[in-house]
Amino acid sequence: MKSAYRIIVVDDDPANNLICKHIIHRFDKEAQVTLFTDPAKALEAIKEIYSLGTDSNPTIILLDINMPVITGWEFLEKFKMLDEKIRKQITIYILSSSIDDGDIEKADKNPYVKAYFQKPLRLETVRLILQLPSDHPTDKKLP
Image (cartoon, rainbow, N blue to C red; front, side, top):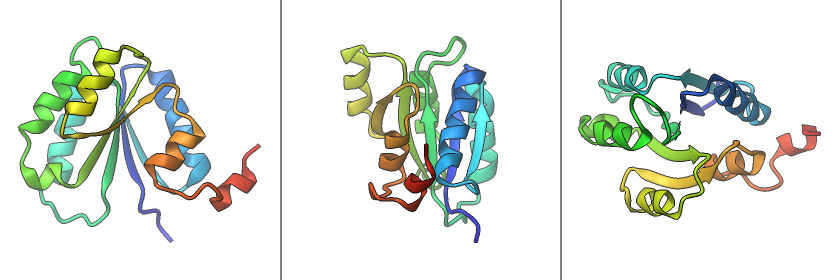
């Protein structure tokens, strides 16, 4: 059975992206995890892949906010300009090292951001994002 989980990680730090992929695959080895270190390329891929609006599997984006060329906030501004049929297929979570209350508040006010989580990605965060029960079967396999 193919996984219904499709997750896009947008973060300029390749090491963090690999950590995210590893943590996600601990819950579901079949999850489709796509990594982008360039937010502009992520937006282009999203436009291309989701423009048909026919995919029944929702997509989750884990978005960093502190990136050098296009910040997460700028990404969200560009995301807002995408067609609604694209936007409604995607749920965005901020995954950032920032502990600034202003960033957390800004994320909370953004209609496209579902929640704000601190880096690094943790097993409990994946459980919350994927809405898995605390006694999820994969917990038994985790060290």
